[in-house]
Image (cartoon, rainbow, N blue to C red; front, side, top):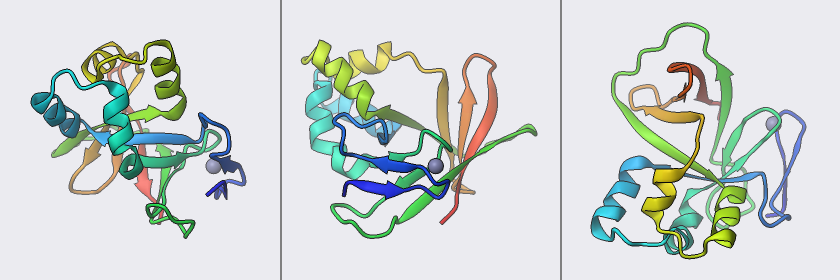
Length: 157
Ligand SMILES: [Zn+2]
């Protein structure tokens, strides 16, 4: 795969390395369980062994997120559209998600190749956190500064 047209008209590409259209999404408990088994695992080793299954394409222009079948140039399995949430949202049964950008991983491992996954997670500066609502399948975006849900990712396809 090299280039993908987003539904908004933008062109997404993984030609640049790192690419600002590539992100990796994990469930937080998966990271915790890895750290329980191996507290000293490096970010790089973890990333390298898991990246393929966690790779998503991201549009900087409209915020859509695409999941493609592994190793194929077929149509996306899933498309998530970001929408602003205006009313108060209540999430009952949720799973925290973590998203890393390709650029973030590349920058930190270039500067500190042996950084541990735990150290990386503990020191990340994120303004947003993400929660998957198990009942609706939507992912809510929580603004840490305002302590408010500001957006949600809905399954578009
Ligand atoms: Zn887009």
